[in-house]
Image (cartoon, rainbow, N blue to C red; front, side):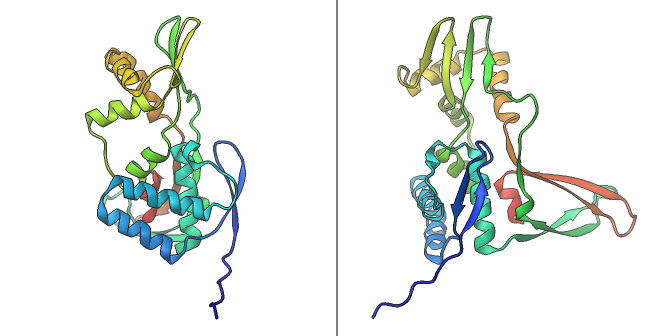
Length: 237
């Protein structure tokens, strides 16, 4: 006789970028084990497959995770992790006024939001007629930077920037992935001036970010210190 199946609780979250409500469940031991094994292998393909499998298994609503920007994926992963392992993460921070007193802070992951900076835009003007429309890094970049913790080298940076070009316009002419190869986008980026490339970098530097601001009080001096933590890895203590 087959053993009974444990009924998993379901939760709801709102995707930051589009406001869509989706239902999700905690990850189970089998899914966590597959992810840990993949991380130990340090194989990007294995890690990406494990993360994709975990997200698709835990998200109960119809969502194409490959199309979600990296900050949505970080937020969703954090919420799944919170209901699976626990919402409270114990952190130790050093008070800024004396630079030595350690204070414990209990971070509630339910309080973490995605910050959308004012003035951020995905349209970069290179001249009066030419410009670039960018898209946010998605699943592959999320796995590489947020889960595997792999920092890009100079070649990778160019590749990531090129992969995030949605379209290039020159007057009435528009070039996108349907008419342009990844190699051609890379070559286009390589031929930008330093100042033009810096404008592209601003898109990433000012992009929406998983963020939380909190304050602690130094018990020895009574002075308050404010901290801002950003990025998925920062919320695991």
